[in-house]
Length: 141
Ligand SMILES: [Cu+2]
Image 1 (tube, helix red, strand yellow):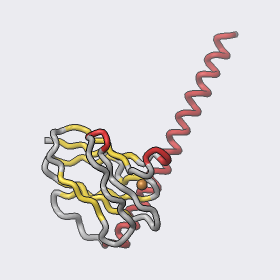
Image 2: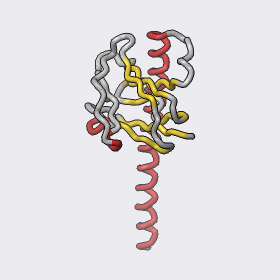
Image 3: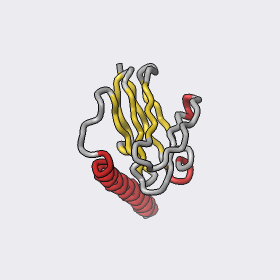
């Protein structure tokens, strides 16, 4: 009998955390779909320059959350929000935080990655603690 109660309790806990993370994932997917639409409205449909991957900053989210680039390529962060400013900060790499990027047309941060292959997590200075605004750039050979 005790075993049954314990199993039930564990099942409920697992069920709860699974639905929590699912809701979170769906939310981010929806935000990023909106960010895509915003970007297209602001900048049109033209493809990015070659060797440049674009990350949109929108509603406390980096979209896409993770990007993979080749060593020597660049990432351009564009704010497609309506009001908030954001930044790009590779804190773990002991790099300086970028300036705050406001949602002005053409405002961006662009960085070329000559770093060794690996995962480089980064933060938005004003929103990483409060809203979990965190992204990753993966550099490959
Ligand atoms: Cu931010």
